Length: 160
Ligand code: ADP
Image 1: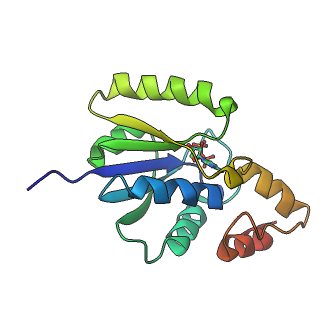
Image 2: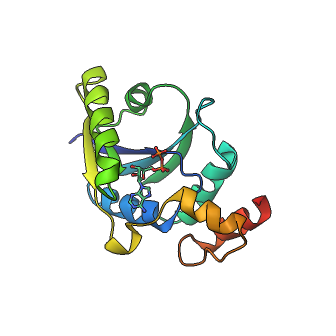
């Protein structure tokens, strides 16, 4: 039987936005299973608790075939090995993302030569979208309707 292609889509997802979902849909065309891997990093400040970030992704991808959602701590490449992933997907919005992503891809590849990092570009509608910008809008009681699914908007409203 041919080997399954398992993709990992790691990130903070604090919270998940339409930009993340756009990348995930594109990634799904390239693998049999796509695992959203929510980073639980004690050194990196996040607003929403990891359980809520996982819950929101699970809710908005309900019914998508081949999607799994989990959280992890520690090194991404170790988690990739544990999940038997062959690909890591990351989204690129602008040149500003490039330097950091390029560096991380090279580090990850040297730690785990068996994995390939795939960069995907979202629909241009989402190029400006980031979780932190959405949180700023939500904190100031603005509408985040066009940027995140309703369940995420509700969670942000309750949170802030
Ligand atoms: P991280 O803290 O790891 O960057 P994020 O949740 O901010 O986590 O992002 C996860 C991944 O999704 C990253 O590769 C990021 O570049 C990508 N991403 C975030 N927002 C968008 C967007 N609007 N369009 C495309 N990719 C995005």
